[in-house]
Image 1 (cartoon, rainbow, N blue to C red):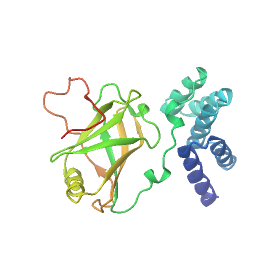
Image 2: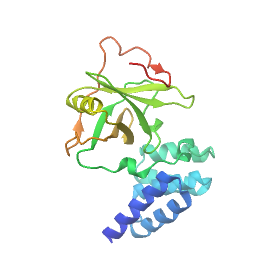
Image 3: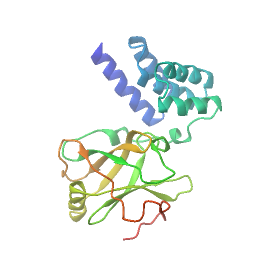
Length: 226
């Protein structure tokens, strides 16, 4: 059963990332037949119902999740949307499922704290891409808002920045995608075209410029400048 459920879960996640909501509904229902109390499957199912505008079904599923986990951030957010009969606009954008596949040497899982005031983990769509700007001593990550402006999410420093500079020096490419998170803490997956990362998880602290803690978040134009 475990292998079968794992395979179904992988397909269900891929269907959601591609925006194939009818398929996602079918797959998550199949998972729940085997594991009726699987909260992740229920949240995926509820979100698929939300995206197909089956709001009553979505409300029912999210209420079931909250009966077990009253502070589940995903269920709370989506139940509110279901009650207002609104779907998740971020969910209409299909993403490449490969963006979340870990590969030894070329990917690194990073946990970082959001320093922007108006952004939290709930602000991100599944697998949403972040803009990456590499400097000598730090790396900045930006989120594109609904107006097309870039908002500074967080900055990182340390050994992982040295690795990203190595990619830049060798004219390689870097990308970053949101994985999951809660409140001001998020997990992202860094991907490089050059194998510079070790297999273990990277734990890094955000870089905060002295005196900038109370300053408004930075907004920059689409074209980055050095």
